[in-house]
Length: 283
Image (cartoon, rainbow, N blue to C red; front, side, top):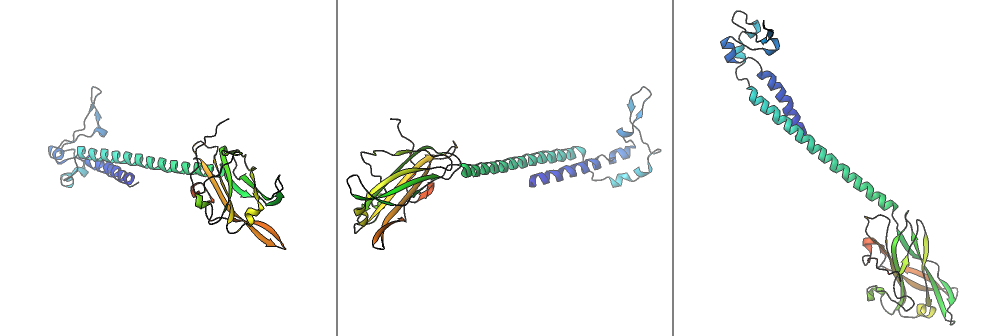
C-alpha cells in the first residue's frame, strides 16, 4: 500500500511539473519566437503553420516572462519522473493484488479446514453397564460391552480396532507400554466401519469375577481404533481409551464401576501412539 501511495504522489506531481515545463523558455522569449501548437494558424496551402509572436504582437502576459520562467524543469526530465511514477504505481498495484490474493487463499484454506473438521468422522469409545453372568463352564464372569460411536456427519473408512484386558498386580497397562494381547480367537485387529452419527458394539469382553476381586492389583481394559475420514487430504485418525474396573461393596454385594486411567485416553495427536497404516488383508 505504501508503494501504491508513493506511485500516486509521483504521478500527480509529474503531471503538474509537465504542465509547468511547457511554459515559454528564456531562449524563445529572447528570440521573439514562440511556437504554440494549440493556436496554430492554417497556411494558405492548407498546412498548419506555427504562430509567430514578435515584439510587436507579444501578448501582454508574456512581458517579463523571462524572469518568471527561470529554473523551469526541462520536459525530458519531467517525462522521466512521470514514467517512474507510473512504474511505481503499477508495481504497487501488483503487490497489492498479490497480497489480496494471498489473504484470500488463506481465508479459503481456513474455511476448508473448518468445514472438514465439522463434517469429518469422529470416533469415540466408551463402555456400557457391566453385567454379571456365567461362562459356558459356569465360571462367574463380568461382561463389559465396548461401544464405538461416530459423532461426525460422514462415515469412516479403513477402520481397524482392538480391545484388551489384563489383571496387573502393580501399576497398569503402561507396564507393558500398552501393548496388545492377542489370542487364537482374535489374532489381528477387527475391521471398523461406522456411518454418520452411528454406533457399533466394538467388543464384549468377559472377565472372570475372581480376577476383578483379586488383591493386590486391578483389572484394566484398554484399546484403540484407527480410521480415515471421507476427505482425501485428511490424515489418518486414532482414538485410544483405558479404564480400570473397580469392585464396590454395596448392600452386601459387589458392584462394578469404571475409573478412567490417567494415560492412553485421547484423540489423534493426544494419543499414546500414532495411527497405524491400513494393512488389513481381504482373507
